[in-house]
Image (cartoon, rainbow over all chains, first blue to last red; front, side):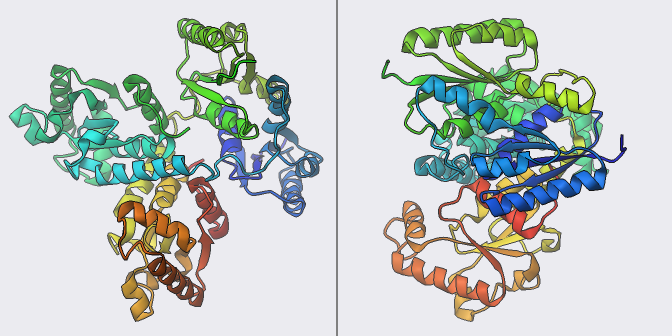
Length: 275
Length: 275
């Protein structure tokens, strides 16, 4: 056994994002195995397949360890060139296309680059509109057109609202605004005026004070804003305010952006515009 | 055969995003088959498995058509409950974990929710920093700290710069700024001053005039800005300017956000911070 990292390739005739995502979800089950990741997108010709094959062969020689190759390849010629390498070749496309053809009683089109292509113009437009909406309604930038929001995230500064709104827009075509809860709101003991008319659309993000203090200290080291006492106080008052208004709330501390976004869609029962 | 839509489920003990993505890439090969998509995330207990099973059974009865179930389930009990339904059950996890265990010579941890979890704090932070960078450097908002950019996208208004920068940040942890090329730049026949010092980091997006006019007309119907003549002129001059400065250029017209972002990473040889 070599103690070098195991080379792991993600190869696709498209972006490779699907191959990568599935590969990651499998590899996350083998935490102790050191790996070196190589993404090779747009392998859509025999020529590019040979180039990619050379990369795999080179990694085999260099590390002395058999590469793992995750692929979603539609073209059988391209697949043939790569699968001939000395590697563990895991092809997602080939494994599942046959049972689907049998189930649907029809042949697949074997067209490359269908996934993540801009084919559906309506979906594309919904995505772009949602992104523009998230940008113009970030951090309480405007009170206009809040009635078009699918959801309005509220929470203290740095609780994860902005990345979540952007992800909701990009991945799901969901229109998400976000509005900060700030010390002035706690003093007045009221929700910000702009969002108080939209309580059913509100969704709260909260976070443990220690983590919030850590995040804020990266931006403004040693500030009162970042101090653990201030974070504790802001969070307690924000949670109290949200609870009294019956606003759903999620603790974002240990969740990824993907998990937060997915749970919001599930909780609020938003209709996604993009699949 | 029923002419109702075929129910397609994406079931996961996590977000379901991986199951969905692979499912979509497979289903895109069967364009003629009408489907109804149901995403069921966070199926991480026997109880939730039974609820999900009831949904699958209900869809079977309602449509008279056998559901297709794409899953990435780690837990064998949960999987057992679902796979017993009258459906085409395609499990990505089970199909690939055995060959990986054999290859690595180690058992997988069978831990749920590993994919898309916030486990890697460094990666999470890189992502957040990149998102903040994209937001503060959108549309030429600031000239500061452009030297930290991995790439600076340039192009006429509405050529796809903003969604691409956000996607680069969210998906890959890449720091991407963007700067518009506007009529004043064409009159002066020069790159905007702020970016002219960073030509090696510049990457141009261009688009066919007809599509640009369409997009601009949605925002400002009937304006000179959106007119086909103006779009033709702006694009010709922008392309000319970029060409003379040796700036790499991509036509975004028929490409998805994912494709544009992936191709930029490949062309510029950016080191991703997030996998």
